[in-house]
Image (tube, rainbow, N blue to C red):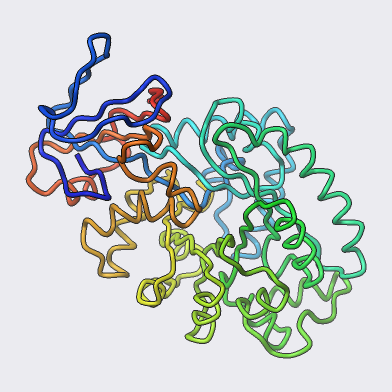
Length: 397
């Protein structure tokens, strides 16, 4: 057993109460077995907290292999075309299937971004755990007031699903799709409602070019839509967001590939968290985020898969192996990033992320065979090795 916040326990046991919380954890002989308890044994396995996927797009489930253009901007246009083929029911069914596939991979909490509202509805319907960030888009500053009226109505409509362990957040999408005024307005709305902010930032290289001197593919596309500049002075994506009040302790910066020391200093000062998606970063941008620098700076870091259109199948353990190579983490550090580290990045560490008395019984069991190095064995496994998953004491896989 890997509690994460304590040393590994050989022949470990976990007692889950009727509310779905952990009431005891320790060596088998030290954990009581109530008379009416259901007892389940897992030999040659490692029991650990449910994994935390800090970046998903589950409304895109089912589109794997359908958008393959190597150019990121062309790929985005393919995604827009694919989404136009689905109605609300299809998006809901796709999101539901995505949540179940996460459970089958040992993931018990997700942080999702999308603009259809399907994921938060599916999380609610399935009694799942996660945060669904609703996306906002528009580059025309003169349209901000109109866009915000519509966005506020959408948030009000979706808020009914923010029940139980389902949270709602806001996501001004990215510097190449969101004006400075819309960034500020969405962020202020999010803070007024006390919900987290999620942003894609410093992801493609042309995003930096857009803000530096209005060049690159995004600048070319925006000119065609009547946008002639974004920033009045050369700046970086991180600095741009900071100028518009986006960054704070409840802001999750996704990808954050193209940053420098000055950007990292801003991120540290604002207390942001980072969702690191190493396989997607390489798939789309042929680049690695400076995650080692973020670790050294003390930023909270969680691991994410992005969508299955970017990298399929979703495999958070594979992301962890890539992250370990980039950071030099030990096996224990890496498993922590998969669990408690992800919970900390999302502000959920008091509820999940470790096998700790009083927390939700979010648990994954991975068949590893006999091993004396359980963390290494977990990292060497794959989705097919996850043999059981519980969410709040309810077996979901």
